[in-house]
Length: 167
Image 1 (spheres, one colour):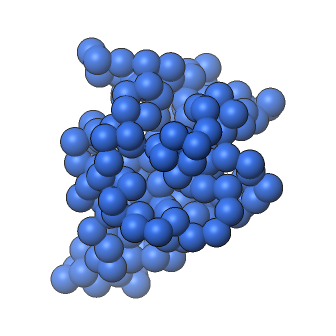
Image 2: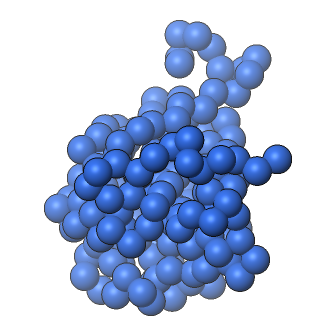
């Protein structure tokens, strides 16, 4: 089934920025974000998926484990944007890994930085959709740092496992 990208119109300032988050780890947010981004790209819209889960970058491990550059290096000014973007030849979905190597120290500070805001604005101008795979909400305050750059959030919960109180 093809998802109709026209149903989700980009905002006036450029591409639509959509953040995918969950209550806690393991609820499937990365899987849903990747499938959404792939569907948008496959429908003919330009789309980039960005792994913003700097504590456990599952998408980076799956899609580009040997990446030389990632989100962390771009925000810190250690790499250029074009050098960190991988594009799937089949769907034309672009992907930006979280970081090239190891843990990122102070992920919240990096996500709350002016450098990240600048990066998201640059991506907004290049793509119809910017899909952000964000960290889970309960264990970390990282998602709150993204409120000013995200247009819409998709909140993922695991059916039958995530309690109403936690959500």
